Length: 345
Image (cartoon, rainbow, N blue to C red; front, side, top):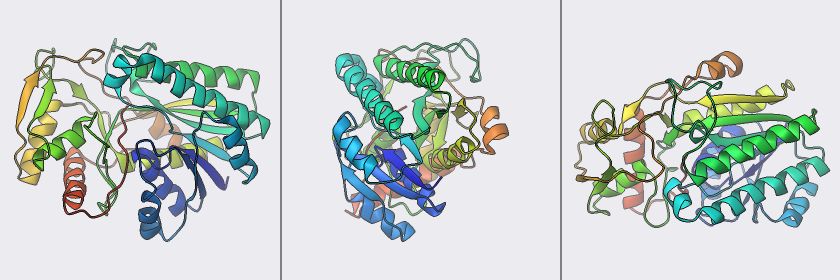
């Protein structure tokens, strides 16, 4: 495989993955509507890799636009990142999430089938497991969801599995992310959301910078190590490397495969905040707020399948994650280019 179409490639995970692909010798063709990202990111990617991303401003829901893009390139594989990605917002605006995220996937599948593009990597999420029945979560855990964002991911997984059944030549990798944080080692790429952040790490960074008065920690009465929610935080560079590994797997025509991408370690919100404070020697004022609708107490991965079948394993630590996040934020504070959208899983 040589030519990779990346939907949502200007976003947080998409941009880091584009770097991994370019450095791996692939050609990257990006389609993004830039609703929560910036075109400037492609200049940064070129500076870091010496290579260009071919990009188009278009909405993935637009079938005709996709057809034109695909016909201009001999696409071998699609990585599908595009979609709305905030759990809280999905609870407030469920119809917006269902319409956009599912329609974009249907449009993409239609164009792939028309053009014999038989390899798709889908940006799924640990939210498809719902409230964990056991931990760590492996790929055999039952599937459900506790919010519209998670439902979108779950419905799309079902759609892609059905596409594979109807078209066995289609190879599909469903990558269930846990919680991406961190930034590129250059600190020129990071999580830079427009408006008020929906994700924990950029809110921590903005609070440490004085851009936000204080961080709200949603719930301290969960049955966890310190009462706050526990998650499996994974460095975005590790996550990007997982996509490159998935493309190599699809080249072996495995059919429809599913992998968790996580570290296998749970970290509470308070543990993450305190590690950020200690390692970066900064203050992060915080206050406890009521639980958010749709949140669960704890969630972390069993990543054994990805290690065994993809040869992939997370390398970065929580210390790496908080350090890289803060260093990227400091560049933003000095108005240096760190122009990447926010994402959630």
